[in-house]
Length: 235
Image 1: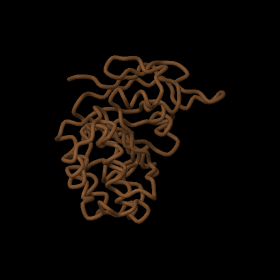
Image 2: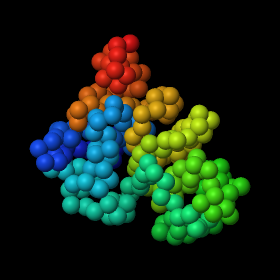
Image 3: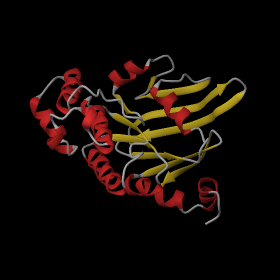
Image 4: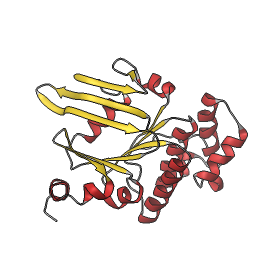
């Protein structure tokens, strides 16, 4: 398998506090990796280190073998990384179509690609609707579609189903699975275990800023120690 992203000894300190402590981690091409853990586990900081919002105190991050230590976030996107943040950041005064045209313009505008994205993300009925008037779930889908429009090799999704209904969450999971079938590699940070079980091929558990467990979904969820730290109780 081709390794897309790898960290070695990744550490982040804020003052005297070790928020991320010596994480060795890798994502291979074609997988959906879910990163989970209890509140305060370091998930958000880890995500921000990978996407360039934070710089590591020590250790390394490599994408397709290239060191990212001093690579700014926008350059990481040009290298083939794309990000959907937890809170939707769409432009309320633009329509869905106009948003996707902006994304496709960076990758070379193609009308066929635009219509394909609208269909793939169930946004055809809202193509000419202002983003301000979309439901929360549709705003999340538009953000994912924007990230996909950049044609990344690796897609980061930060809590993509936060605030969604059960039905919207399931539909989002099906969208993500179809993206994987199209060859996209995806890393998801989330705490919705029903959603994680729906999409994950491999799970990484963080706890106390360290990598606590890593492996196939069924194997990780069967561990008593994971149930204890994640759910606060033994199975």
